[in-house]
Length: 211
Image 1 (cartoon, rainbow, N blue to C red):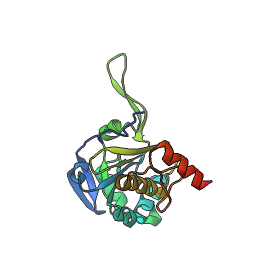
Image 2 (cartoon, helix red, strand yellow):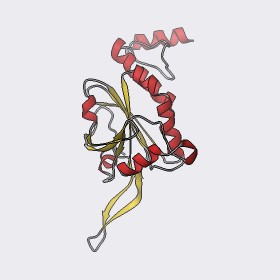
Image 3 (cartoon, one colour):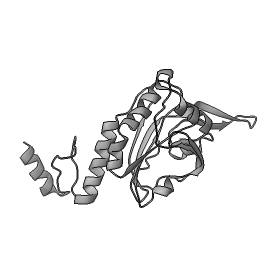
Image 4 (cartoon, rainbow, N blue to C red):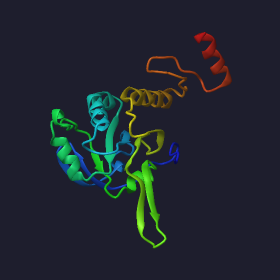
């Protein structure tokens, strides 16, 4: 599993559904460079079980991300037509109607490969035939990308394990606090808590005040 933190987020252009109903070509995260933070997350597949709970949870908190100058973008290996259909399907029928942030189609699986969240890979047989070994879907990868396009946080869960939207917001708060103040955020830090200067003296002072 690659560690992308500290590196530029892999670039791509792909079809996506935006605003819940519009299919666009050549969607790219580059449109947000120097403008927005990006929370880019992968999920295994449309019309599944844990996935709609996550996509709807991110939608429910979308205003909180917007307050933090952060756009939310989702991605799976399904086609743009599958995304569109899922977005039109009511919640009581297993759909995600009401989700407005972009959902990228990674039908070729190259985006998942480049972010190293694909649950398998292609191999050549002895006869030269290409086969996919593993599960041709993405793990639950989540990447927080700063305005310069650099990955500052990544999390990868196995498919049965849903993610915490609140934790994603906490990490964005910590990143933005550090960028603004130059102080680092200790364990379990949340917005409003004290941070500390990145020196031994700063750490000692923080621990002394805490205890």
